[in-house]
Image 1 (spheres, rainbow, N blue to C red):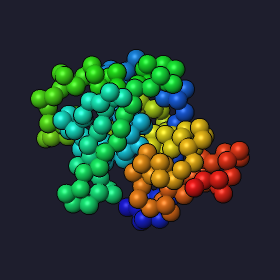
Image 2 (spheres, rainbow, N blue to C red):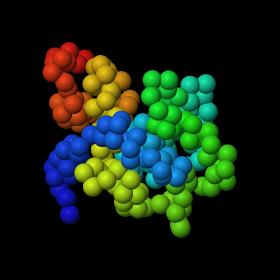
Image 3 (cartoon, rainbow, N blue to C red):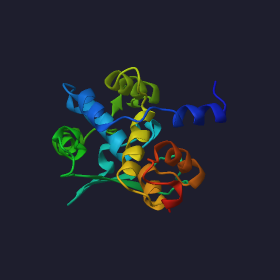
Image 4 (cartoon, rainbow, N blue to C red):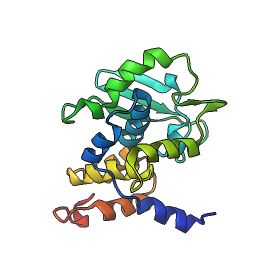
Length: 194
């Protein structure tokens, strides 16, 4: 059993995944496996939040999809959060675009209750963790996806803590600071992050 300090140390020490490794990892996987990994990566969601996504939680927008979150660590009871998944022209390979896969899969799974269905509703957190780890490889954990998207954002000059909180879903600046310190490149001193 982990205490709070052990758990947070493990999360932050997760090796952030790079786009090149992500591309190699999903190569040859089926569309649902790709979707599990890509939604987790691009949304910055925790695995516990991903398994609770329902097919009807996605709203199509001109830019991609808006994902409505009904259950999240940082949401109060009755509060609904959201994450945007964009179609991106900056992604070099269409394989990394979750919008393309959602366009393909959503019409066929809309009658399922959960996006990642299991025997009794949604797949378990543990099942999702195992599936993600088997796709990414032994040196990465599911948290590497969450860490990777924040790392990539900071490396690409996203220095606004409000925007980083939107990407990660953190409410606390202190929690976000651990990621910032781990990912801040030398060209962006911590004093530049606002």
